[in-house]
Image (cartoon, rainbow, N blue to C red):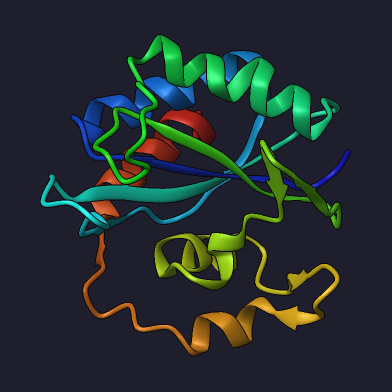
Length: 171
């Protein structure tokens, strides 16, 4: 099976939205691992802080099937509304960050996610789960990306993360 990593974010009731999203995802696709979640300030808006993390899943779905057949359906079911403002508050945001070493550059699907190299709240959780990762086609090590980022404003959500891990990984 391919190694697939999905970024998870929310700033509308994240303490309930994220567990609901992971529950819905786990009902369709086995969850392999979950990173530490972080609280970070929203980009481009004065909205509530975001909770962001990463999950690894086990799937034979294609990246397109995963994004449009599973992730977008979960977002819709949880009330995600997509509008012109890409930084608008959201109940849940689920994005494919990495799908093995696959590179896709299409108008509605980009893998690996370009935010890996730009956003600490994407890069750091991914690094926790797959520290040896090298961005396909660029040969840039994720460890180099993370070491160059400023994460001073991010708050580790240890208790929230442990609750998620207990629910999905400890029996």
